[in-house]
Image 1 (cartoon, rainbow, N blue to C red):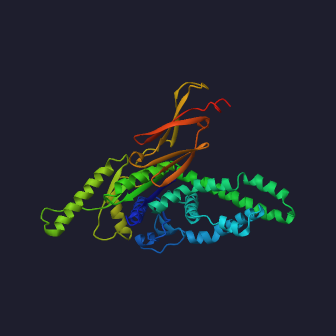
Image 2 (image 1 turned 180 degrees about the horizontal axis):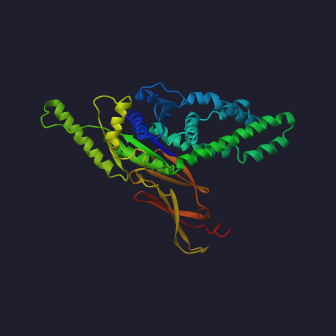
Image 3 (image 1 turned 90 degrees about the vertical axis):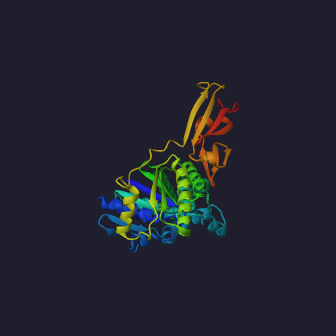
Length: 407
């Protein structure tokens, strides 16, 4: 199943373009779902229909829904939160502290993404178009599955075995306590499984992201940072969409209006040239006189944007692996061996980068995004000797650590 996620700064028109893409796909004969995780609730306005949490048919082949993260938070998460509190309280954590530990920032975003996964896995649609929230929230949203997995493992390492052992040693915990603990463990197992499923969905070759932007001077640098942050999470961007591009002013237009339009057009043209130099396809959506709402206007917009191309087609080849290791010297277990870890980070050459070794992990921070990557086994027995950027690749050099190399 094809999944396309639209994101961009607030107000750039990503909801409109996501709706236009879905409307065009449905008109081509495919069964399409467009779903929004944006708290702004503007997808229904673009389609001119009332939307709720469950998909409704807008026209033949086109379905739409808006994920209500608050309702999900009050439902499924409240039950899981109670189970987590049970585990913490049983482990001797004060009840008030346990309550604070189970209030996890970003859990509403995680639930919204989990609902998208549920809709995707229902198999009812050929294409799912996702209208994500603004870029900053989307980066946090897309990085949550991995972050929550790490949180879960740190809080409850090997939780099933630990809980079983804990139950055995608890003074006064009889058979009556067993069902509550079983429910807590089952809830954690379900959460871990959901997180694995979310990571698989986002890493699937049929899932890609399209960045929507307006051609302004500050956009190019921000776009580079966003591309780097997404690559750091192992996510694939298959194209850029420049929205609200002004037409060139006719020679007959004079006065302040003509001067403003020419200056603005020239500025946008320069920005588009820089965007076109990025290693991604760039599509142009011209500024319309009125906001395109309703299916006829949305399909007209999609026709201009995609022309004869398939809106669901991936416009970029599969992303290269985030991590690659190659030997640069020696062979086998030779102490004179040397290795290089290559991390693919599109756009990193223009931004700040921070790298830290933490035990068997490598923490990389760029563009306000931080990810902790587990080092391949051979590099865990090595020492990092240097790092440099080679275009969009981060290259980190390693040599064997004599203290642990042959252990």
